[in-house]
Length: 421
Image 1 (cartoon, rainbow, N blue to C red):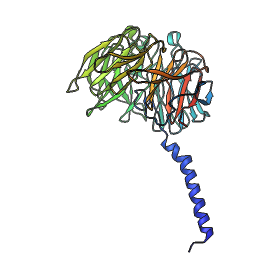
Image 2: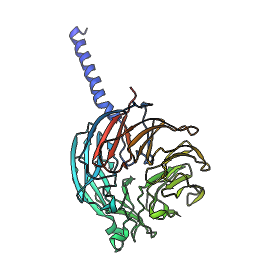
Image 3: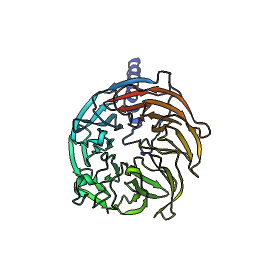
Image 4: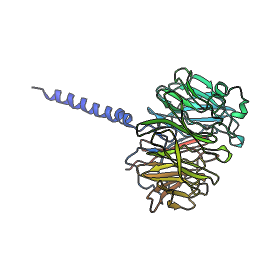
Protein backbone atom coordinates (compact mmCIF):
# COMPACT_ATOMS: atom_id res chain seq x y z
CA UNK A 1 0.00 0.00 0.00
CA UNK A 2 1.19 3.55 -0.66
CA UNK A 3 2.46 5.35 2.42
CA UNK A 4 1.76 8.91 3.61
CA UNK A 5 4.86 10.16 1.82
CA UNK A 6 3.53 8.83 -1.49
CA UNK A 7 0.25 10.72 -1.00
CA UNK A 8 2.17 13.94 -0.25
CA UNK A 9 4.18 13.46 -3.44
CA UNK A 10 1.04 12.92 -5.54
CA UNK A 11 -0.68 15.91 -3.90
CA UNK A 12 2.31 18.14 -4.63
CA UNK A 13 2.41 16.94 -8.25
CA UNK A 14 -1.30 17.73 -8.66
CA UNK A 15 -0.84 21.23 -7.24
CA UNK A 16 2.06 21.86 -9.61
CA UNK A 17 -0.02 20.60 -12.54
CA UNK A 18 -2.90 22.91 -11.61
CA UNK A 19 -0.54 25.90 -11.33
CA UNK A 20 0.99 25.06 -14.70
CA UNK A 21 -2.48 24.81 -16.24
CA UNK A 22 -3.53 28.15 -14.79
CA UNK A 23 -0.27 29.79 -15.80
CA UNK A 24 -0.05 28.37 -19.29
CA UNK A 25 -3.47 27.00 -20.13
CA UNK A 26 -5.19 30.36 -19.64
CA UNK A 27 -2.77 31.94 -22.05
CA UNK A 28 -3.55 29.23 -24.60
CA UNK A 29 -7.25 30.01 -24.21
CA UNK A 30 -6.74 33.77 -24.64
CA UNK A 31 -8.76 35.30 -27.45
CA UNK A 32 -6.38 36.59 -30.11
CA UNK A 33 -7.04 39.53 -32.39
CA UNK A 34 -4.34 39.07 -35.03
CA UNK A 35 -5.57 41.66 -37.55
CA UNK A 36 -7.39 44.96 -38.01
CA UNK A 37 -10.83 45.18 -36.31
CA UNK A 38 -10.71 41.69 -34.84
CA UNK A 39 -10.46 38.10 -36.05
CA UNK A 40 -13.03 38.60 -38.84
CA UNK A 41 -12.22 42.27 -39.57
CA UNK A 42 -15.81 43.25 -38.80
CA UNK A 43 -15.38 44.97 -35.43
CA UNK A 44 -16.92 42.03 -33.55
CA UNK A 45 -14.83 40.46 -30.77
CA UNK A 46 -15.92 37.07 -29.45
CA UNK A 47 -15.43 37.93 -25.79
CA UNK A 48 -17.40 36.79 -22.74
CA UNK A 49 -17.68 37.80 -19.08
CA UNK A 50 -16.98 41.49 -19.58
CA UNK A 51 -18.22 44.25 -17.27
CA UNK A 52 -21.73 45.50 -18.07
CA UNK A 53 -20.87 48.94 -16.73
CA UNK A 54 -17.66 50.75 -15.86
CA UNK A 55 -16.66 52.70 -12.75
CA UNK A 56 -17.19 56.45 -12.98
CA UNK A 57 -13.47 57.04 -13.52
CA UNK A 58 -13.33 54.25 -16.09
CA UNK A 59 -12.01 50.69 -15.87
CA UNK A 60 -8.67 50.03 -14.20
CA UNK A 61 -5.66 50.88 -16.36
CA UNK A 62 -3.31 47.90 -16.29
CA UNK A 63 -0.43 49.65 -18.02
CA UNK A 64 0.48 52.29 -20.58
CA UNK A 65 3.46 52.96 -22.84
CA UNK A 66 4.70 55.91 -24.87
CA UNK A 67 7.32 56.42 -27.55
CA UNK A 68 5.41 54.88 -30.47
CA UNK A 69 5.68 57.99 -32.63
CA UNK A 70 2.96 59.26 -34.95
CA UNK A 71 0.35 56.73 -35.96
CA UNK A 72 -3.31 55.89 -36.40
CA UNK A 73 -2.64 52.15 -36.37
CA UNK A 74 -4.58 49.94 -34.02
CA UNK A 75 -3.04 46.88 -32.34
CA UNK A 76 -2.97 43.21 -33.27
CA UNK A 77 -2.57 40.46 -30.69
CA UNK A 78 -1.44 36.86 -31.14
CA UNK A 79 0.36 34.23 -29.08
CA UNK A 80 0.83 36.45 -26.06
CA UNK A 81 2.24 39.41 -27.98
CA UNK A 82 0.90 42.77 -29.09
CA UNK A 83 2.00 44.57 -32.27
CA UNK A 84 1.51 48.06 -33.69
CA UNK A 85 3.27 50.61 -35.91
CA UNK A 86 4.38 54.24 -35.63
CA UNK A 87 6.26 56.91 -37.57
CA UNK A 88 9.42 58.52 -36.20
CA UNK A 89 10.93 61.13 -38.48
CA UNK A 90 10.23 59.80 -41.97
CA UNK A 91 10.67 56.16 -40.93
CA UNK A 92 8.02 53.61 -40.06
CA UNK A 93 8.59 51.33 -37.09
CA UNK A 94 6.91 48.12 -36.00
CA UNK A 95 6.74 47.41 -32.26
CA UNK A 96 6.21 44.22 -30.27
CA UNK A 97 5.16 44.11 -26.60
CA UNK A 98 4.22 41.40 -24.20
CA UNK A 99 0.76 41.59 -22.64
CA UNK A 100 2.11 43.39 -19.58
CA UNK A 101 3.41 46.30 -21.62
CA UNK A 102 7.08 45.31 -21.82
CA UNK A 103 8.65 46.16 -25.17
CA UNK A 104 10.18 43.11 -26.83
CA UNK A 105 11.53 44.80 -29.94
CA UNK A 106 11.17 47.72 -32.33
CA UNK A 107 12.14 47.57 -35.98
CA UNK A 108 12.43 50.20 -38.72
CA UNK A 109 10.83 48.88 -41.90
CA UNK A 110 11.05 51.83 -44.33
CA UNK A 111 9.84 55.27 -45.24
CA UNK A 112 6.30 56.50 -44.60
CA UNK A 113 4.23 59.07 -46.55
CA UNK A 114 3.95 62.67 -45.32
CA UNK A 115 0.19 62.20 -44.96
CA UNK A 116 -0.83 65.54 -46.51
CA UNK A 117 -1.07 67.18 -43.09
CA UNK A 118 -1.88 63.99 -41.19
CA UNK A 119 1.48 62.24 -40.69
CA UNK A 120 1.58 58.80 -39.13
CA UNK A 121 1.32 55.12 -39.92
CA UNK A 122 -2.01 53.77 -41.11
CA UNK A 123 -1.42 50.03 -41.26
CA UNK A 124 -2.34 47.70 -38.40
CA UNK A 125 -0.03 44.67 -38.68
CA UNK A 126 -1.48 41.28 -39.61
CA UNK A 127 -0.03 38.30 -37.74
CA UNK A 128 0.19 34.98 -39.58
CA UNK A 129 2.43 32.15 -38.42
CA UNK A 130 5.87 33.50 -37.58
CA UNK A 131 5.45 36.63 -39.71
CA UNK A 132 4.03 40.10 -39.30
CA UNK A 133 2.70 41.74 -42.48
CA UNK A 134 2.02 45.42 -43.08
CA UNK A 135 1.49 47.91 -45.91
CA UNK A 136 3.28 51.24 -45.56
CA UNK A 137 1.62 54.48 -46.60
CA UNK A 138 4.00 54.67 -49.59
CA UNK A 139 2.82 51.28 -50.83
CA UNK A 140 5.47 48.86 -49.62
CA UNK A 141 4.30 45.45 -48.41
CA UNK A 142 6.69 44.33 -45.66
CA UNK A 143 7.09 41.00 -43.87
CA UNK A 144 8.86 40.93 -40.49
CA UNK A 145 9.76 38.04 -38.24
CA UNK A 146 7.57 38.05 -35.14
CA UNK A 147 10.47 36.72 -33.04
CA UNK A 148 12.83 39.66 -33.49
CA UNK A 149 11.28 42.17 -35.92
CA UNK A 150 13.86 41.62 -38.65
CA UNK A 151 12.56 42.40 -42.15
CA UNK A 152 12.16 39.12 -44.03
CA UNK A 153 11.17 40.71 -47.36
CA UNK A 154 9.83 43.92 -48.84
CA UNK A 155 7.80 44.44 -52.03
CA UNK A 156 7.09 47.86 -53.50
CA UNK A 157 3.61 47.06 -54.81
CA UNK A 158 3.29 50.35 -56.71
CA UNK A 159 6.55 49.72 -58.54
CA UNK A 160 5.75 46.07 -59.25
CA UNK A 161 2.14 46.60 -60.34
CA UNK A 162 2.07 50.28 -61.29
CA UNK A 163 2.84 49.67 -64.91
CA UNK A 164 5.39 52.48 -65.15
CA UNK A 165 2.97 55.14 -63.95
CA UNK A 166 4.15 58.17 -62.02
CA UNK A 167 4.30 56.99 -58.43
CA UNK A 168 2.44 59.99 -57.04
CA UNK A 169 -0.45 59.28 -59.43
CA UNK A 170 -0.98 55.93 -57.67
CA UNK A 171 -1.24 57.45 -54.19
CA UNK A 172 -4.50 58.42 -52.59
CA UNK A 173 -4.08 61.97 -51.32
CA UNK A 174 -3.39 60.92 -47.71
CA UNK A 175 -1.23 57.90 -48.53
CA UNK A 176 -2.02 54.20 -48.70
CA UNK A 177 -4.16 53.03 -45.76
CA UNK A 178 -4.49 49.25 -45.77
CA UNK A 179 -3.93 46.33 -43.43
CA UNK A 180 -3.05 43.26 -45.51
CA UNK A 181 -5.30 40.21 -45.56
CA UNK A 182 -3.84 36.71 -45.37
CA UNK A 183 -6.04 34.04 -46.93
CA UNK A 184 -5.13 30.55 -48.16
CA UNK A 185 -1.49 31.28 -47.30
CA UNK A 186 -1.45 34.33 -49.57
CA UNK A 187 -0.78 37.94 -48.55
CA UNK A 188 -3.41 40.11 -50.25
CA UNK A 189 -2.77 43.77 -51.09
CA UNK A 190 -4.48 46.41 -53.25
CA UNK A 191 -1.94 48.30 -55.37
CA UNK A 192 -4.51 49.77 -57.76
CA UNK A 193 -1.82 50.21 -60.41
CA UNK A 194 -2.05 49.98 -64.19
CA UNK A 195 -1.26 46.28 -64.06
CA UNK A 196 -3.21 45.07 -61.03
CA UNK A 197 -5.98 46.32 -58.79
CA UNK A 198 -5.26 43.49 -56.33
CA UNK A 199 -2.39 41.04 -55.90
CA UNK A 200 -1.43 37.99 -53.84
CA UNK A 201 2.11 37.51 -52.54
CA UNK A 202 3.90 34.47 -51.16
CA UNK A 203 4.20 34.96 -47.37
CA UNK A 204 7.68 33.40 -47.30
CA UNK A 205 9.27 35.24 -50.21
CA UNK A 206 7.01 38.07 -51.44
CA UNK A 207 6.81 36.45 -54.88
CA UNK A 208 3.69 37.30 -56.90
CA UNK A 209 1.22 34.39 -56.82
CA UNK A 210 -1.55 36.07 -58.82
CA UNK A 211 -2.76 39.52 -59.79
CA UNK A 212 -6.18 40.91 -60.63
CA UNK A 213 -6.28 42.90 -63.84
CA UNK A 214 -6.47 46.66 -63.39
CA UNK A 215 -9.89 48.34 -63.43
CA UNK A 216 -8.41 51.84 -63.63
CA UNK A 217 -8.99 52.65 -59.95
CA UNK A 218 -6.36 53.48 -57.35
CA UNK A 219 -6.47 52.29 -53.75
CA UNK A 220 -9.34 53.68 -51.67
CA UNK A 221 -8.00 53.56 -48.06
CA UNK A 222 -9.86 50.30 -47.53
CA UNK A 223 -8.79 47.04 -45.86
CA UNK A 224 -9.98 43.93 -47.75
CA UNK A 225 -12.07 41.20 -46.14
CA UNK A 226 -12.87 37.57 -46.96
CA UNK A 227 -16.56 36.94 -47.72
CA UNK A 228 -17.65 33.41 -46.76
CA UNK A 229 -21.38 32.98 -47.07
CA UNK A 230 -23.53 30.25 -48.62
CA UNK A 231 -20.54 28.22 -49.75
CA UNK A 232 -19.03 31.17 -51.61
CA UNK A 233 -15.60 32.65 -50.90
CA UNK A 234 -14.44 35.97 -52.31
CA UNK A 235 -12.25 38.86 -51.27
CA UNK A 236 -14.32 42.04 -51.06
CA UNK A 237 -12.95 45.58 -50.82
CA UNK A 238 -13.46 49.17 -51.95
CA UNK A 239 -11.20 50.93 -54.43
CA UNK A 240 -11.30 54.65 -55.20
CA UNK A 241 -14.48 54.27 -57.23
CA UNK A 242 -15.79 50.72 -56.93
CA UNK A 243 -16.63 47.76 -54.74
CA UNK A 244 -15.01 44.60 -56.08
CA UNK A 245 -15.04 40.87 -55.38
CA UNK A 246 -12.03 38.73 -56.27
CA UNK A 247 -11.55 34.94 -56.28
CA UNK A 248 -8.88 34.11 -53.67
CA UNK A 249 -7.83 31.02 -55.62
CA UNK A 250 -6.60 32.75 -58.78
CA UNK A 251 -7.27 36.48 -58.47
CA UNK A 252 -9.98 36.59 -61.12
CA UNK A 253 -12.46 39.44 -60.82
CA UNK A 254 -15.85 37.98 -59.88
CA UNK A 255 -17.80 41.24 -60.01
CA UNK A 256 -17.34 44.98 -59.90
CA UNK A 257 -19.90 47.49 -58.68
CA UNK A 258 -19.22 51.13 -59.52
CA UNK A 259 -19.58 53.24 -56.38
CA UNK A 260 -17.85 56.66 -56.45
CA UNK A 261 -17.00 58.38 -53.17
CA UNK A 262 -16.30 61.96 -52.18
CA UNK A 263 -12.53 62.59 -52.55
CA UNK A 264 -12.18 58.89 -53.50
CA UNK A 265 -12.30 58.00 -49.79
CA UNK A 266 -13.76 54.55 -49.11
CA UNK A 267 -12.16 54.11 -45.68
CA UNK A 268 -14.72 51.68 -44.21
CA UNK A 269 -14.57 47.99 -45.12
CA UNK A 270 -17.88 46.45 -46.27
CA UNK A 271 -19.87 44.35 -43.80
CA UNK A 272 -22.37 41.65 -44.69
CA UNK A 273 -25.01 39.23 -43.55
CA UNK A 274 -26.15 36.55 -45.94
CA UNK A 275 -26.37 38.01 -49.45
CA UNK A 276 -26.59 41.62 -48.18
CA UNK A 277 -23.49 43.83 -48.22
CA UNK A 278 -23.45 47.29 -46.63
CA UNK A 279 -21.00 50.10 -47.33
CA UNK A 280 -20.80 53.60 -45.83
CA UNK A 281 -18.81 56.78 -46.54
CA UNK A 282 -18.39 60.14 -44.86
CA UNK A 283 -18.93 63.72 -46.04
CA UNK A 284 -22.69 63.28 -46.15
CA UNK A 285 -22.65 60.47 -48.73
CA UNK A 286 -24.16 57.96 -46.35
CA UNK A 287 -24.46 54.26 -47.03
CA UNK A 288 -25.98 51.73 -49.38
CA UNK A 289 -27.01 48.10 -49.13
CA UNK A 290 -26.43 45.68 -52.00
CA UNK A 291 -27.81 42.18 -52.53
CA UNK A 292 -25.70 39.54 -54.20
CA UNK A 293 -27.24 37.63 -57.09
CA UNK A 294 -28.11 33.99 -56.53
CA UNK A 295 -25.22 32.93 -58.77
CA UNK A 296 -22.78 35.20 -56.88
CA UNK A 297 -21.67 36.95 -60.08
CA UNK A 298 -23.03 40.43 -59.38
CA UNK A 299 -24.65 42.69 -56.79
CA UNK A 300 -27.60 45.06 -57.02
CA UNK A 301 -28.35 48.05 -54.80
CA UNK A 302 -31.53 47.57 -52.77
CA UNK A 303 -31.52 50.78 -50.69
CA UNK A 304 -29.47 53.80 -49.71
CA UNK A 305 -29.55 56.08 -46.67
CA UNK A 306 -27.81 59.43 -46.07
CA UNK A 307 -27.89 59.76 -42.27
CA UNK A 308 -25.23 57.20 -41.39
CA UNK A 309 -22.16 58.65 -43.13
CA UNK A 310 -19.18 56.90 -41.51
CA UNK A 311 -15.85 58.53 -42.27
CA UNK A 312 -13.34 55.92 -41.09
CA UNK A 313 -14.66 54.60 -37.77
CA UNK A 314 -15.92 51.23 -38.98
CA UNK A 315 -19.32 49.55 -39.12
CA UNK A 316 -20.80 46.85 -36.90
CA UNK A 317 -23.61 44.60 -38.21
CA UNK A 318 -25.43 42.49 -35.59
CA UNK A 319 -28.67 40.54 -35.97
CA UNK A 320 -30.14 42.54 -38.85
CA UNK A 321 -29.04 45.92 -37.46
CA UNK A 322 -26.24 48.20 -38.65
CA UNK A 323 -24.40 50.45 -36.18
CA UNK A 324 -22.01 53.33 -36.78
CA UNK A 325 -20.93 56.77 -35.58
CA UNK A 326 -21.70 59.33 -38.26
CA UNK A 327 -19.92 62.47 -39.44
CA UNK A 328 -22.77 64.36 -37.78
CA UNK A 329 -21.53 62.93 -34.43
CA UNK A 330 -24.66 60.81 -33.91
CA UNK A 331 -24.57 57.10 -33.13
CA UNK A 332 -27.07 55.51 -35.50
CA UNK A 333 -28.70 52.09 -35.75
CA UNK A 334 -30.21 51.13 -39.13
CA UNK A 335 -32.46 48.25 -40.10
CA UNK A 336 -30.72 45.97 -42.56
CA UNK A 337 -33.91 45.09 -44.43
CA UNK A 338 -34.79 48.63 -45.55
CA UNK A 339 -32.26 51.14 -44.15
CA UNK A 340 -34.74 52.74 -41.79
CA UNK A 341 -33.37 54.40 -38.65
CA UNK A 342 -34.21 52.16 -35.69
CA UNK A 343 -32.55 54.25 -33.00
CA UNK A 344 -29.95 56.98 -32.53
CA UNK A 345 -27.98 58.81 -29.85
CA UNK A 346 -27.48 62.49 -30.62
CA UNK A 347 -24.13 64.17 -29.95
CA UNK A 348 -22.51 60.79 -29.28
CA UNK A 349 -19.36 61.86 -31.13
CA UNK A 350 -17.77 60.88 -34.41
CA UNK A 351 -15.38 57.98 -33.98
CA UNK A 352 -14.77 54.23 -34.14
CA UNK A 353 -17.08 51.46 -32.94
CA UNK A 354 -16.67 47.80 -32.00
CA UNK A 355 -18.83 45.09 -30.37
CA UNK A 356 -17.97 42.70 -27.53
CA UNK A 357 -20.08 40.54 -25.19
CA UNK A 358 -23.39 42.05 -26.23
CA UNK A 359 -22.37 45.71 -25.92
CA UNK A 360 -20.84 48.37 -28.15
CA UNK A 361 -17.63 50.23 -27.32
CA UNK A 362 -17.11 53.59 -29.00
CA UNK A 363 -13.97 55.73 -29.09
CA UNK A 364 -14.71 59.28 -30.21
CA UNK A 365 -12.54 61.94 -31.77
CA UNK A 366 -12.84 63.93 -28.52
CA UNK A 367 -11.18 61.09 -26.60
CA UNK A 368 -14.31 59.73 -24.93
CA UNK A 369 -14.52 55.94 -24.55
CA UNK A 370 -18.16 54.87 -24.26
CA UNK A 371 -19.97 51.64 -23.38
CA UNK A 372 -23.32 51.38 -25.16
CA UNK A 373 -26.43 49.23 -24.89
CA UNK A 374 -27.17 48.42 -28.57
CA UNK A 375 -30.90 47.78 -28.04
CA UNK A 376 -32.24 48.87 -31.46
CA UNK A 377 -35.41 50.19 -29.83
CA UNK A 378 -33.60 52.29 -27.24
CA UNK A 379 -29.83 52.65 -27.55
CA UNK A 380 -28.18 54.34 -24.60
CA UNK A 381 -24.74 55.10 -23.20
CA UNK A 382 -24.13 53.04 -20.05
CA UNK A 383 -20.68 54.32 -19.03
CA UNK A 384 -17.89 56.51 -20.35
CA UNK A 385 -14.45 57.81 -19.49
CA UNK A 386 -11.89 60.08 -21.14
CA UNK A 387 -8.54 58.94 -22.52
CA UNK A 388 -5.97 61.57 -21.60
CA UNK A 389 -2.80 59.83 -22.78
CA UNK A 390 -0.98 60.48 -26.03
CA UNK A 391 -1.34 63.30 -28.51
CA UNK A 392 -2.92 63.97 -31.87
CA UNK A 393 -6.15 62.55 -33.25
CA UNK A 394 -8.13 59.82 -31.48
CA UNK A 395 -8.41 57.75 -34.65
CA UNK A 396 -7.07 54.27 -33.82
CA UNK A 397 -9.77 51.63 -33.42
CA UNK A 398 -10.06 49.97 -29.98
CA UNK A 399 -9.37 46.26 -29.52
CA UNK A 400 -10.62 43.75 -26.92
CA UNK A 401 -8.66 40.58 -26.22
CA UNK A 402 -8.95 38.24 -23.23
CA UNK A 403 -10.94 40.78 -21.23
CA UNK A 404 -8.57 43.68 -21.83
CA UNK A 405 -9.42 46.84 -23.79
CA UNK A 406 -6.49 48.29 -25.76
CA UNK A 407 -6.53 51.87 -27.02
CA UNK A 408 -3.85 53.64 -29.05
CA UNK A 409 -3.48 57.40 -29.46
CA UNK A 410 -0.44 58.68 -31.32
CA UNK A 411 2.71 57.94 -29.34
CA UNK A 412 0.82 56.27 -26.45
CA UNK A 413 -1.02 53.00 -25.89
CA UNK A 414 -2.96 51.80 -22.84
CA UNK A 415 -4.54 48.57 -21.60
CA UNK A 416 -7.70 48.57 -19.43
CA UNK A 417 -9.15 45.67 -17.47
CA UNK A 418 -12.81 45.25 -18.45
CA UNK A 419 -13.30 41.72 -17.14
CA UNK A 420 -16.32 41.11 -14.93
CA UNK A 421 -15.23 40.62 -11.34
